[in-house]
Length: 476
Image (cartoon, rainbow, N blue to C red; front, side):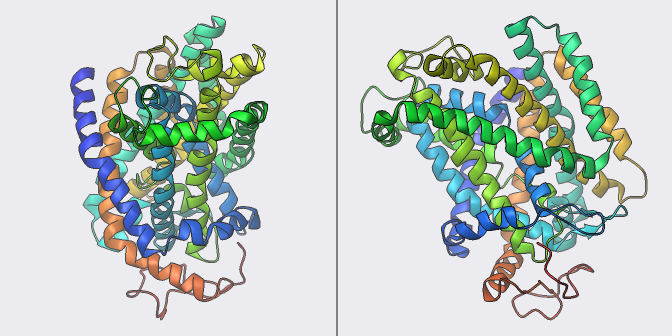
């Protein structure tokens, strides 16, 4: 079953989804006037501009932190290592490319999530692909399909996978029984997820940025120690990306392996176009939808250009010590390669530090993933039943099972369900993109003007909303 599901997943990702995600990113890069470059300064400014929200809502920074918590996980450490081994140093270049075009896609889907969001009974907001599919395209059925795909992927299977990574790491490194890890994880997870979105926002607001900064600083220390290798490593990445230098390919082959491995790692680390991050983006309180679009686009930059690149430079700087040799098979896989590469530069003391960091990455992903699932459970229930507690029980049970079980088949099935949600979301944002482009035009006309949908000449029609109807004092 695992092999069968894996083969289906490979076909969908390799021949359909990667191409569609990249083409969508290129299309929105053109339509937005390359906003990822033109408005990069705006993105940076938006992250730090608003940390407060009124009426019990979630701030734009907290929504950004929830997105980072889910995005930044073991994939940034283990996944990048696997991509470099299979695709060579050139995989890093293609990882950068898909992240840069993906920033435009992330802007569109996050802006749509803001435009079509609704106010929830606890003072927060709910939105995301399920909501803008139903309210923008008039299809409840497609919205339900998306929500179900996401709930299985992020509320069940990915919780299992992250818990499994934590348990496996502690067992192999320190001999901690998976049963002990399972009990501790259930307790830690329950403390947060049963507190709802507001508690998740408070926890991730500090955890997500701190863990990313610490990891990037470790990589910067290694880069500075090997400052004389910076230019040669960039040359190696470019040469490998285009097959210009023999002997620096991955074990999977030449330029094609670099493109496929780099693209896949970049796309499914930063999540641009998948429809996951907009669920967090919609919860923020901002004065203009485009503002949260800019912030979520920066999330793609942080995840891939900063965090994934940190892993890449840690590994590539270890070539001199022989930990990583391009084109050669290695017994070190995933996170183990990254940890050993760092230890070869900084000494053995860094290994337990990175192990702890990996554990925090995994735990933060468990929390962030739950937030995505909760938004979609709310969509299905329409707030008529209290389903959040049930989801909390399912998520904590998934964490427990994941810590003690082998999950290859579950992981492969989750890849398929994620592909399903991504395909639905991509079609939706291509059809609804004109609304986000109108919001971008409105913002560029006057960045300080709060957004009002009613009678707005930049809108393609009347936006179905009771939120964006009055001009208020900017609070984000």
